[in-house]
Length: 86
Image (cartoon, rainbow, N blue to C red; front, side):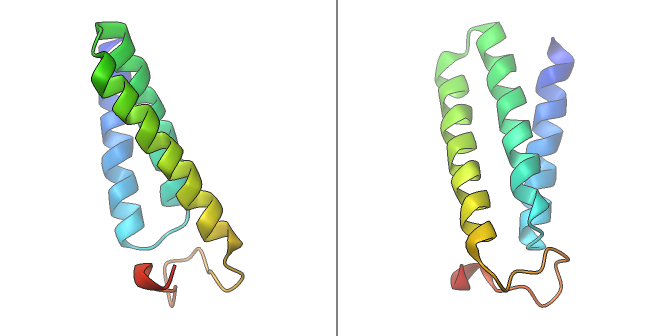
């Protein structure tokens, strides 16, 4: 079960990197990563951290939906709108 926590942590960090590059798939990576972290936290009894990961996962879903509503968004990371524009 320990590997689930590590995979989740790596995906969360990768999600931050992809988001900094303004790549739309960052949201999907974050969703999966936070879900895995929540599963791991529940398995070890870290309920507050699990709840936090699930709350962040909900915000990731909201971010993904918000970015998808932009018609001019290009998921390549080049010439994408800045975060302030979203």
